[in-house]
Image 1 (cartoon, helix red, strand yellow):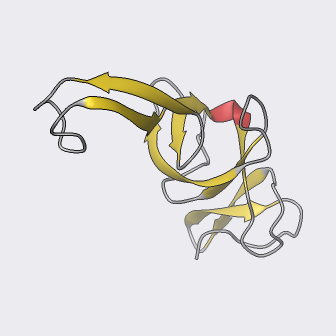
Image 2: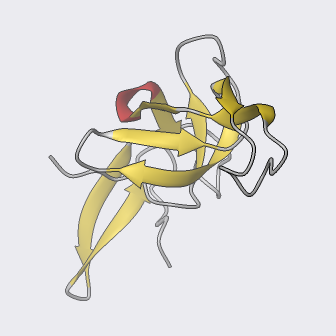
Length: 107
């Protein structure tokens, strides 16, 4: 299965407590088909002192947890709509395109 969402793409969350929120993809786990989206699915982690650079004194920190890739949809930069992504060959390269406005997503 081809994963058509890449790092730094803007996505819309379709389900869950953060439904209808937009954010940038920070990281992708292709093995588990999960993505971490900026500002979405925040969870609290308890960190011991000296274990983490973000909280050297320890305490409770908020981090973004991953969500399944099927629960997000790419937002097209041209039409600003959440869209299904298609693939087409253009000059020998695979290029992603928006199925709503038919514009290329990759430059």
